[in-house]
Length: 507
Image (cartoon, rainbow, N blue to C red; front, side):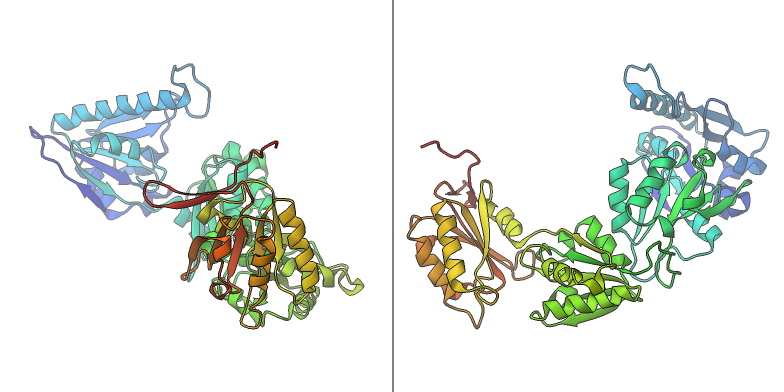
């Protein structure tokens, strides 16, 4: 319960926002009934037809001597010729409605504004609250929301353990709905009716349609529940919700494909802040997570999932293991750092998946933020023009090839992002690369050293190419070597920024 108080010059009345619950009068709270009984004025919103769901819920508690204030919306979903458009018409209505209630409050009357569900949860009352609560003593009576009612009617847990519940209005753009549904554990989408076709497409595009349930008029007359996929769009009213229940211990939805699938996902350079909504959804939906243990540790533990960690040098074996799991009907996420297609696991998985034995196993690759992009963003915009990305590791290709490609990129005056620059067993490549690049670049060329970007040991700094010290570089570092056009300046507050202009000189 929230309470706000302010002294008034006269014997002003008290404003109540009264939550009535999802529709069944028996689900009104004792406090809600008490407040209505004690009120002088009972106010409620309705459309122009005059019928108010809020009033119908509380009807048995409204006395003949109550003063009733019907706050009738000028528009609901139709168009309007108001100069301010739809939003302008509603703002004007709310202001006028608040002024009507203020007359009663100034006269010392107690005003109870009825609200379906909870007054401050997508409720009409909140518009009165924002206009009046700073001027009059106010109390909000919470109510059971349609979200809780829908979960109860479905008889299935909504969220459990560490799961996250997302509440979404169906009026969001379809792509936004899709992204949020893909990223969350559980969800409730409200305000259906005319939005239902787009909402259903969003569930389908996010891969969540098989899990989705439908609840209409929960706890009210005409209540209906079922699978969202089987619901007739023409039959859906505004007072309906789409529900993604808890995934924990939930029956696995039937899948059209006979085998499982492998999804290769990139976690970005560090933890959860770098995950895309699509990647979050794929990780949450997987039965098995396969990957280098360091990268698996970035993924939250979920009940029911199997985690298969391994060393960083067994890419092919890891890929084959994941594909074998999928061939047995498992949904498998192969977890990679950064972007899985940039010096990472996507190539290993696709190489094994090209074998005849795995030809029928679906494989998808989901992008992630690369280490180079992350380091560049921290430094400014050194990758603002043409650039090349090279790995200095000679474990999978000879140094002669690396040196030849470095010379080619340097002579072309490209910015160069260098991955895998050094390790405990490889300490000489950075020095060799520096000396080779100095044959083509000024000693003052800026070099960004980005280490553990996004992680607890993050360090991003810029040095001259001539001052690049191999001892300060390891496998967790990415190097970005500027071109002849890359700028390196210190701004007024002492901040250093590096950027490469998009315009290249003609001469």
